[in-house]
Each structure stands twice: as structure tokens, then as C-alpha cells.
Length: 253
Image (cartoon, rainbow, N blue to C red; front, side, top):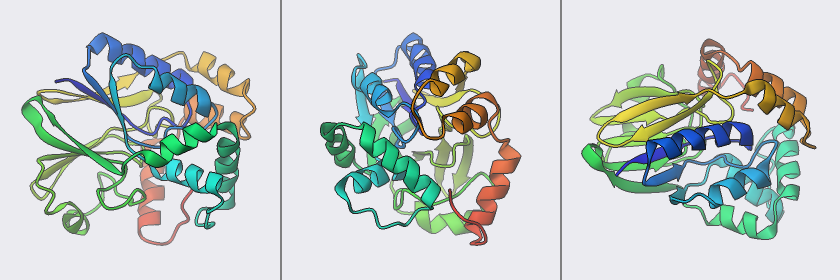
């Protein structure tokens, strides 16, 4: 079985469409969508695109998806900064009620047996939390309690939008990167899983993609096009921010 893992799309339909063309060429049997699907400029179009794929698709819920559901239900506790809540409110208004119910139904994790990799656990951030922050630089001793006792050889995560491949104790943990909001070189990042783990970066016409985003009514279309499509933050910049946030001296976005 060949599985594509696509994470953190964030409503970036042009990037998703490019990745799906590569996925079709790879002849996968299964697509795992690892959360944070709709929080971005083209939420309805992005969800519709995924729901119409000709292969089996498994969704898991990310923190941004959860926040959209809470906003729609009127149960938002105000745990995120106002700028993020503004985006969440806008996205919630775009979605149909059945879409919100669908997001609410997505599980936090899923497991699949894949080729030579064995049983693989997919989660958004960590198996216990959709907001835990860790990167390739996070000390292993902080992460051992998080990944012990899972009884799987491989965990696939996302959330921090940067690909990595590391061992935490006896568990291999890989980050799929982000389709729609990458940190590092521009492009759309994903994984192809089969007998091995293949880290993929799909290139697409970012100028055209930015123009499509600018044509939407998204509140932060200009910022998204400039800073998530045309010129994403560098990996070094993102690592510095996440390291500060993990130490408790910075604010989450």
C-alpha cells in the first residue's frame, strides 16, 4: 500500500492542487489529511477538492479545525490570539453547517499498516495534543514521555510546518511539513509512504497561486500571498520562534 500524507493545507488551494497532481502520478492507494485543512483563504474549495478525490481519504483533526468548530458552535474560549480568532471567525462564516459537522467528526489520530513500515500512527502535533510544539531541535529527553508506550515504529506529525526525520527513543518520528504554509524553501511539502518514507516538495506556479488568493475575500489575503506563498519564512526564523514559544517566552500565533 502506498499512502500520501498531506498536512497543514490552510486553505491554500493552488498548493493543494499541485500536490494532488503529484499524488495522482504516484498512484497512491490512500491519502491521510493530517489536520489544519480549512483555516486559510479558500476553505470551502479546499475541502470540496479533498472530498472529491478518487482514492480513499482519512482525515484527522488539527487545532485550527477544532477552533473553527468551536467558533461555529459559539464555544470559543478565547484561548488563541485575537488575530487568529479573526481568521477563525471568517473561515467559520464561509463553511456550510454540514462542513462544520464533518470537521467535528474527524478523529485526533489514526493508524494504518503500510508496506515495509509496519503500523504507522498519524497525529497532528503529538498523539496526546494537537498543539504540542516540537521540532528537529527539541531535546529528546523532553519528548520521550510523549512518545513512549505507543507500540508503533513510526509516527507522522505536522503542526510546525517543517519536515524532519528523527528518532525519539525507539520511535521514528517524521514531520510531513506543510502543503499551504511552509517554513523554509517555497513549495508544498508532503510525504509518500510505502516501503520507505519519501519526503516530497512540490513546486507550483506561486505567482499565479498568489494572484488567485488575492482575488478572494480572505481578510489577510495580501499577507498570506506574500508570506506563505511567494516568500515563506526561513527555517531558521521559524525554529527561533518555536524554540522561544516552547520555552514559554513567546506568544503562539
